[in-house]
Length: 468
Image 1 (cartoon, rainbow, N blue to C red):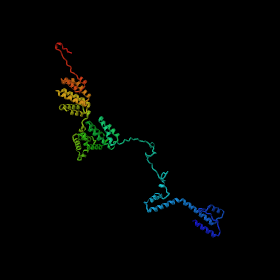
Image 2: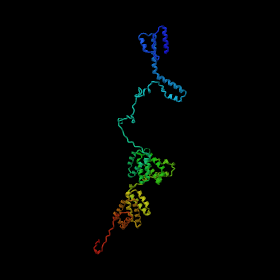
Image 3: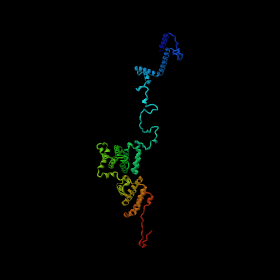
């Protein structure tokens, strides 16, 4: 462009035929504007020089515009170069590098538009015209203020018991229940626990412990299941527990050989108490392969089919221990002693006495045994009864207190007994001495035995005076 301007200026000078003062060029090939302006002020410029000056100003403005847009032009040239090279080999390292450094917008919204439509960026609350709804406070928010949320309700969270911890927690509760027999306390303790999906296992654990215990324990367990259904347990939970126990019968028999019959009685009693659904037995018809499970279900079916089964099932475990009438206990103990005098089996007599579960009433057994000795004829009864009391004493089945109370009762009634049995005093003295020799009673108890006083009268000539 400068060449064209020079040619044009030289042509203008020659055309006019007048030599005009030329502008001095700098070393860079640019004319000094100050000199041109000074010439204009002095009025030495021709119209051609003035046009040349305007052209130079336009060229200078274009150079400034090029400098400001050099970054954009460089970016466009880079994108063109990338497009040309990647078209040949887009998988080449150079092509990938050029693609990674390509900062050209691909959103299709055009350059210069606000990000996210004006709804994004630092310090921006959202797009213009956006209406925000009320949001619930988040407890995980760092700025969450618990006191500013109104009334706060605190609840105790009980962790769920794992399967391994369930047995350790439930067994002491059941064992303690066997001592006090209060179903309400068990209900309160279970409500404090979080049994979770293992709730049904409480019933199976309680029944398993009662199988290894006494008849009174089984009676208490049946009452417990009946009282807990509808409060802590459901019928489906109890049914699931008995399903599990029917499958585990082969293992239960190893510790309790009578487990099938006992489990059948438990099932019949639970159905009578409405702790199990009435169709529980019908579910297993023709579907049981285990002989032990079949025996348990047959036992339950027989008990349910008996006449007046509801009354009978209430006493399916018998009347437990201290709940039995005194007359019934006395009758059982008399029967026990008579069977022992006939058979002489100590183990059977001990087993029968333990089944009565009345350790506080064992003094009655001692009393009845001594009465039988006094009413018997011969030494056989004396020897057998001494042997029986000695065995009970050594095994700890009859305590010292119960033994002393039984003998003392006979001592107190010996005078009345003597009216029916004239030889009662002599037989009693012989029995007491033999018991002391076998270490059944203490020396103090032997000395407390009353002796019959013998009054000797003198002849008629002595005036009826009694000799001292």
